[in-house]
Length: 424
Image (cartoon, rainbow, N blue to C red; front, side, top):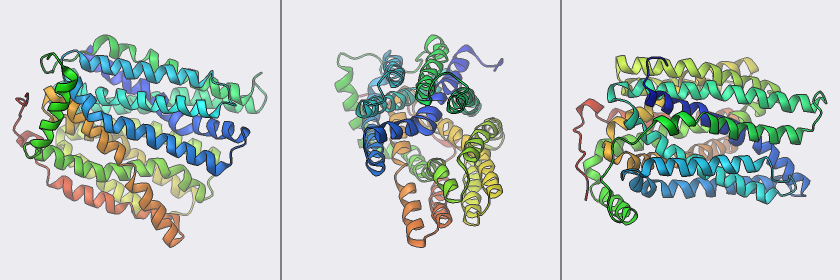
């Protein structure tokens, strides 16, 4: 960290900042809190689960469809930071509101959560695009990997504090209820997110941009339309996005289905939480390692290594039987999860025209979000047809093979001509 510039440190710290939201709000605590609130209000478990699914799908779809046009407008001078700040404020304010909305107002809780998803997703479009502004191309692998590593490390601290509050309140060691402890966790998330975003807001500036125009919104739409018209010009970029769509779908599916998969194997909730924590810790140094190896062996090579590791993971999952097997599987995931995500971001950043980084990272966001559809369906369908969850996870090998084959056809970034003169 001491060798990084202020801009690079500020950018990296945002991964540290928003990681609390990822694990506490979307994964660990709020889903259970919402289910309990809906149950107290008299909703059937299946009904509240359906509403939870609808809320996530709608919020994700909304921000994904808006991502390219938001990015296109954000490419104009001064707009990138404004958009980032707006979505950040939206996310943090409504995360705080989760802590004050009464538990009997399950619908209001769900609406607030949907807005946090939009805020979180919106900031990430511009955060990822800021990578081209904060560092040079030869350092993108290292800086992107450091970001993911900081995210994994940072997520463990509020996670431990929040889980400790909940467990101690369950055992009546602390003088308040589990509900209050959960609300405290939401407040901790918002405060963590807000505090460690300050370096990003203070030090990171938009360097690459398009000159201001009288009507940036209408011009943003025109630029987006122009990009589609000239899609052949960006063949390497969109070829990478297609490969990314397949292999990141497999990565995301393994992340989102891991808890359910572990439960099917009979692994206890406490063991699953411990394994989740260990995975976060182990993933951090491996994310940095991938970044260093990418500088030596090229980013594309290390992405292919990561895809191969996930092929091994899918194969091993087919034979999974014991808790020890699940531990081994989790550590294999930890070895490549952060690396493949970080290098995908930096590899894409090297492909995009810098003055149009926001627009193209809008497309990147769409492919990332929509890559949460095929994998879970493939796992569910295969598991249902075979009556075996292991077979469902094994079926994901198809996504990694397809993604790897397409990635092989993407030219190396240093062989791609830079085209920055794309203004209308």
